[in-house]
Amino acid sequence: MSQAKPDSASPAPDKHRRHTGIRLGADLGTRMSLDVLTPEGTDEGRRVAAELIGLVHFEFLVLRLPWVPGLRTHLIPGNMVTVRFVAAGDLCGFQAEVLSHTAKPALIAFLRYPEVVEKLALRQHRRVQCALPVQVHSRRGDASGLIADLSRGGCRLVLDVRGQAELRKMTAGDQLILRSSFGADGLPQSVTCTVRAVELETSRIVLGIAFTEADQTFWKTLGAFLESCELLC
Image (cartoon, rainbow, N blue to C red; front, side):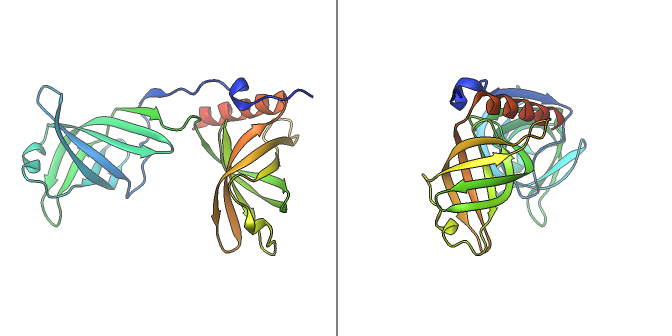
């Protein structure tokens, strides 16, 4: 059976994308940066940190800002700002109109919800959230668990390691074989993987995994599954 590497079978990622009329993919507490724009629409060079503390989708955002001398003079209704943040491996940015601001109990700005959000992929491969049952086989033992997110280059595994002292010794660089089903036919697919990151918890272990070797059927099935997920996102 022929073997192939992921880069030879998976398409190049779409690095830069423009989205209109979408829900902003940022949770409350997301750290952001805010750039003040001049009336001509260019960055003035004043950039401050911000925190998203509220939003009503498709209406407005609420940002908490630091006390920076002169910043309030730019938070006049109708002025424009540029906002940037990172979400799901993408650097996201948009321009927004200032609706109002308040100085008490903190400096808080209300911005109009953006019509267009631009995204630049920071990861080589875009990840999709999922919850796929998985079986893992390694020199340290076997385990079952879930694939928590998945991309063309790898995935994040959550494994139950209760009573398995050897599996709790998993380290970066370890090799393992992953078996899971994500095709329409329900047949399990196998891929050889390398552990890149390890997070050990009380009863489980979270592994960052890179796919290293599989047959062409695996790459084709994986690509079709991810494309269907991205269309639904």
